[in-house]
Length: 442
Image (cartoon, rainbow, N blue to C red):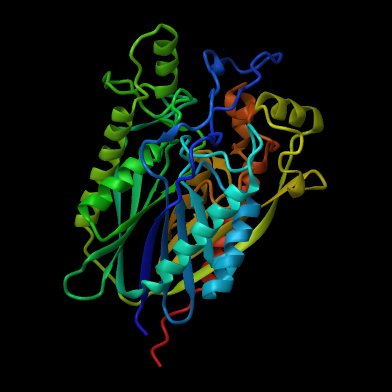
């Protein structure tokens, strides 16, 4: 049978009145607390309404031998428990094996707190959210039709900045685009999968309206240009990557957060507005569209494969871990059901589609870790997806622990965990390649 694909988009915006995720009430009074949080303040109040809707966007691919599912959610993170529940329900409904289902959060900081980090929440909210996501996957599977797939890479260095080292620190300017189009002559655009690394923090703690932030604007713009398409945003290794501030000040670029803090505390106009969020989202969308229109080679037969591996990442020693949890205003129970013998038990995953790899990493890995995985997997093109399937928070390379910075204090994991994650990711990506099956031509 020919390669088939189906897509669906479902509104998952919850009711107003829920706590919102992101911008916790940091305990900045702790001794030696990082100086880069000066001027920070946490969010006050609960969600008051909706600025733009939050979505579950799903792509299902089937080559007659295997199915794979990519899910993009306008949420700050997903946890392992949430991922397990969704995978199990999708497996029961449409028969996709759990290790072939990759769930990525866009990491918007303007969505709901589904996990009770800041305030207790009715567990039925998460249950209902999971049902909607599974429903979207079932719709996508029912919508399958013959497709062709192609890829292209755009370049965009104008909207992101390394927030630890704005002048010399690396960013990943590559905008990875997978195009899924109808197999007939009109080549109707059915799905677009966009991989780009940036923290969606254009909207600040002041905002009390649900929004997809920068990725939401970008994907909505792409969908307006291709009105029958669903555009999935899969965030990259963006643990240390922020948006830049508008209006543009030329070079050097400016990190939007310190610019905002200075302006806010002086009572001046600030850059973290919905309009400026739209600007950056639309710039990203323009690169996506240009890349789509330059994709030449499209294939209608495609091997598919997948693999998942549980990975033990070492926790910080007890006093440092307690300090981290206190600083981040998280209870001692955070992640307790995943802690075994001083390790945080999480997962890495890879989906192989043709000669491309989608590598799902938990939490918020630094960009340097993504680069190292790509280097190790070359010449095969690997797209790094952060905030995938689980949330052990920030994952840093060993050298980053030397700096007394926000992410260092915000990481529950010990030095060396980033390098262990790289090794696990390379191993699971190679397993996904080995598991690839071709279309059955019999």
